[in-house]
Length: 196
Image (cartoon, rainbow, N blue to C red; front, side, top):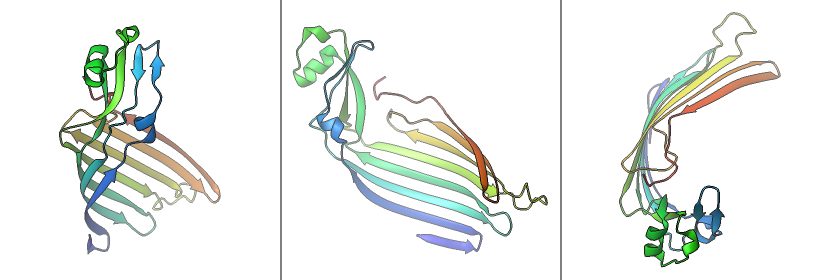
């Protein structure tokens, strides 16, 4: 759903459902042994599909005229069932769950993917700005464009690779057929596994 309150101001809202299938490697991958890290990575044939419901809304203000660009504020929430998470377990824990027995690996950590039994809730807020600085008088400077984005993410359960804070910036310049830019991303610490 989209609603224009003014020619330069827009509000959007949306909802969708989706199903996420497990990756083939997570279902039938190799039994991967890392001697240095003392870790065994194992596939899980019993993984079930994920079920997602996503709610989102977005406010946008558009700059027109000689300096096109936009400033946006967006919020989203995703509720997931059967969410596939990466877990680390000791040899004893893994043996109890799967019946795997091999004393050679009693000092190893076992890494695999499992479906979470709890509903996973992920929330995100994005604040973004991008604009071409066409209002500058000098024709060489009018091609400067800047953009920045800040993301704040929350999850009700520990999730792999979810950074609570993330900032990205880009500075570019173009003149006729010449174009150059520099960009950077900073992300807060993020967990590698769903286990503590």
